[in-house]
Amino acid sequence: MARWIEETFHPHWRVRLEASKVLHEVKTAHQHLVIFENETWGTVLMLDGVCQLTTLDEFVYHEMMAHVPLMALAAPARVLVIGGGDGGVLREVLKHPSVAKATLCEIDRTVIDLSLEHYPQIADGCFDDPRAEVVIADGLKYVADTRERFDAIIVDSSEPIGPSAVLHTRAFFTDCKRALKKGGILVTQNGLPFLFPEHLRATSEIFASLFRATSPYMCTQPCYFGGPFALNWASDSANLLAISAATLKSRMAKRTIETRYYTPTGHLAAFALPGYVEKVITEAVELARSKGKSFAKSKPPARKRK
Ligand code: SAM
Image (cartoon, rainbow, N blue to C red; front, side, top):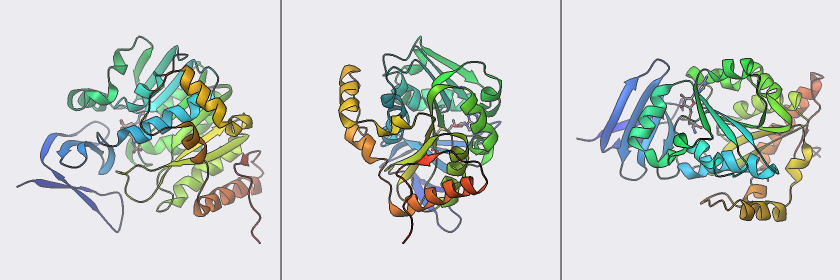
């Protein structure tokens, strides 16, 4: 009899996935991990009862986490990925020929090892790329201690629970800002705004208080049940948010990067926010402003309610 594995993240409803085969299940030093096969989604990774990825749709999230910040930069050379032990974001980052070195800082070695064992096609050899560096450490401590400076920092964390909770804090984002080169970009996963607007509001308020320009962008990640998924962007270079489709098109062609979800026009469309998300951002920026800690202009400019 097949086992049904539940996602336990949502307090009042559950998603159950049939496990045609449980490949590995363990309580690591940091979290509960289970990897299993499902007829529809392929191989699935769940951490602490939250679906992290499936081999069917992982490309959506990984492409949008990597290419939106890196295509906006003329020649990104030094990139930091926090979390992301499955290797999907690193895979996409290393598609950019100007990237000379990319560091992946993951707290749980087990995620990397088991990802390579059960779905090596996601990393697709990126860990063997001479430009890749892997650091097993808590991302909070890594950015607090690093003396390096990065063109982009991409936070591929889990939800703000367990070991990942620290990766959604002001202290962490403040150190991320310090570790960015001038005009560098910080991007983080920011959850499901339809169900958890407070997650997006909290991060947006922090970003608005630390950076000149901030805005979430959206993607449709089928296995993150609960509506469109938010990624959040912050930089002191507001002009990077105003990049043209023509520039993105020519960069993508020059870099000969192939994708299945990311497109230059989709890049710009991802920043066109649904009204309920725009409302959350407007409130977050106003909250930061009311605390006298805001010099960010959210994008698009806040509309005054009639
Ligand atoms: N896409 C997924 C999501 O949005 O839920 C995230 C996927 S990725 C597998 C999350 C990774 O972050 C995991 O491998 C986890 O071990 C790692 N992680 C959690 N807390 C961390 C921390 N404090 N420092 C570094 N990595 C961390």
